[in-house]
Length: 142
Ligand SMILES: [Zn+2]
Ligand SMILES: [Zn+2]
Image (cartoon, rainbow, N blue to C red; front, side, top):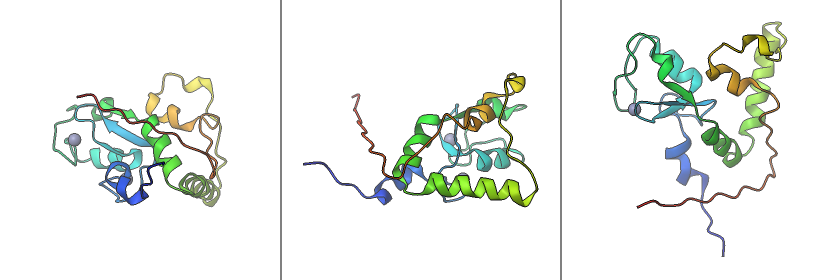
């Protein structure tokens, strides 16, 4: 008998405490492992030096060095929340259109750019179907 859980039971693990929405481009602070949306934490760190959740001090001069994209968590969020990926993609397209921009494919010439941007911008790396089957196994270590 499969165990049935509601999405809201997962909310504490997949909701950003800065914007109260589901993670978009989940980004984790390497010092304390708290996670936020990329845009939320980048904006926050422009005028703060600590983690918004636990006030752990982040790198004094280059706080972005202590941020890491959390692809696995973002995959889980997109697969758990119906329609989130599609609506986020639509929002991006509309953002570009409203500014008369064409979303450009990232090429290798920005290879030296921090991985924070390139990891999420590869269009081939993410594709989610609304009816995708997800199998998740959680194991406890002590
Ligand atoms: Zn957020
Ligand atoms: Zn923290």
